[in-house]
Each structure stands twice: as C-alpha cells, then as structure tokens.
Image 1: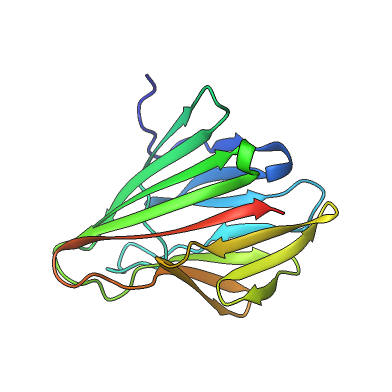
Image 2: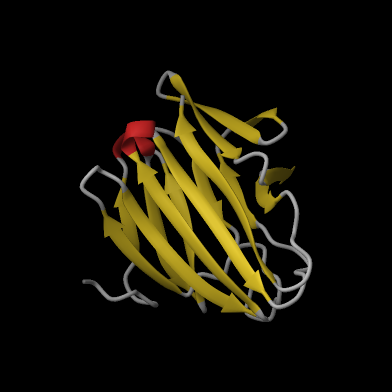
Length: 182
C-alpha cells in the first residue's frame, strides 16, 4: 500500500469530462485545483499561510490516493493548524457524474471560522443560494454546497463553502460540496 504523500511531486486524478483534480505542495500544505477539458472553468483552492490559526481552507499536509473497483477514485487529506485537526476526502464518482468533497475539523474549542475557499475561473453564475454554474460541453457544470449541513458564500469570483452551523465546545464539525455535470 502506498504511503501518504507530503511535499514532492504533484498528485492528480484524471476524471475525463469531469475534469482533472491536481494537488501541489505550496509552502507548508497542499493546494488543489480542478481544470476542465475544453473549458475556461477552473476551481482553485485559496490557502492561508502558516500564521493563520483558522485558515480559509483546510491545511492539508498529508495526502493519499486510493482507487476502487467501481471506478471511484479518492484523495484523502489530513492536516493541522492552530489547535484544529482537519480531514478531507475528494472523491470522483463517475456513475453520478460528480466529485463529492467531504471535510471535517476537530477542535478542542469553538472555531472562529471553518470553510473551504475557492477562486472560480471562467464565467460562473450564482443560480441559487448555494449553487453556481458555468456552461460546459452543452450542459452545465455545477458547484453546490451540500444542504442542509453546508452553505456557500460568494465574494467577487471567490466562493467559500462553510458548515451551516459550527458546533460549540470540543467537537468535530463537518461540511461538504459537490461538483457535478448536469
């Protein structure tokens, strides 16, 4: 079994029409981005620096890729900042024509903020409170927060997916979103 990766070469999942997810090491954590064939659509993580206790995206410092017999491919990530411990799974699900992204943070006290922030490249349009689309191959590529546990907040061309509620005290808080063609 492959060991988790920290630093070094980029790691990618090629999802065909569902785009390519690439992780690259930057300073003390991985940044990641989706690029989609024959399109200017890009979804790129926005990262904080190591001095930020509650970063604008989970500070993924170790990643591991795994493939399943049913076609799913997953990149798992973990990391720490301040007193928070983050985990993430980014799953390509070809049968559902989507990527499912699930995130969590375990903290010994109530976090000031939890979110996953992305710079959107291309002409994305907000079509609902928690959904954004861009034309893609005669269909729509949609980025949507997984309701009711998650919300999306937009500012200019940056979107932040956040938990709808942050749990008070020592607890694990989860949030999720998906990128799909439909």
